[in-house]
Image (cartoon, rainbow over all chains, first blue to last red; front, side):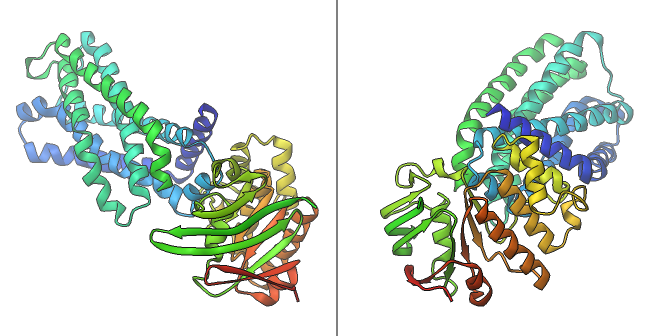
Length: 225
Length: 216
């Protein structure tokens, strides 16, 4: 399973390095979204207060594009059917695609955080760094796992472009809530302290465990259908 | 002679519809068998059944020694199904595609090189992205992937579709070479003249039933 996962992740990342869809399309889209949020809220105090939520909202919107791209490369020339037909371990495919997606999300989130600092005057504080990093790692894993699972589910369905947001966004609501609250605590926005953030990280960890195990078991039957 | 495919009164359904209505078919190692018949007759379904992708409803089906009634998954990594799509990644080069598919079964670098050589891809086309290849070159790359995957049974659905005359000749010689190297091939095609000349046997598929005839 882990050999296949490494193979699939390396392949997905190589495809991305060649096509540069993330760098040329998804990153600019995410940055533009952040600028639009700044226009919409227009007041420094408000935008600073809601900065963590805006970072994670922009991440979710970009996630949809990344997931669709991740499965478009598999379905463009029937590769997902070929993988299935070749008996390649479906758990390995799931984990490999999730790892590649997480790597792309991580790059995206760094950009979004920096954009929040520049546009929304968000401030890092030393005491919150560990919480911030843990939150981003946990939320990234959660989003990548659930994105891969639902991407696989929607991949074989007609109208998948419109179906995916409908399926995915309600499911990732706990990640949006947990990651936003924990990031608020790490950055100290809305008067939150670092200790307030850890229970939310716990929620993210449960989400990761749930979708990690569930996705590994369910992905095979999902793409089989 | 070793039997690679043995179907006896095999029935398969897709949703509510029977797509194979009791097929009897035996294919031995090294043979090229042509499945001929009109659209919707069941050719693709028969290939998918042999690939372990379509469950058998009734009857018997054994492929490469695996009983498909109990072990469909067991046959998948030994069979190569090439449908209308090639299963290639357009942004990767020919070598990267062949290497990827070979790696799914743990093929060595030597085996990958041999597969590329055998399909005539090792020199000029090795570093070309698949997106820049012609239809024939893509087909050849897909076949190289089957070789790298060590597929023992090749199931080809309309392999000549979209190829020009030179590409078709090239494909035919590739398939002949593959059988001398030990592969067994089942081809579904409308092109009786071309594929029939290639095949050792022709099997008519009509209404989900198979009827054998002598190859011309």
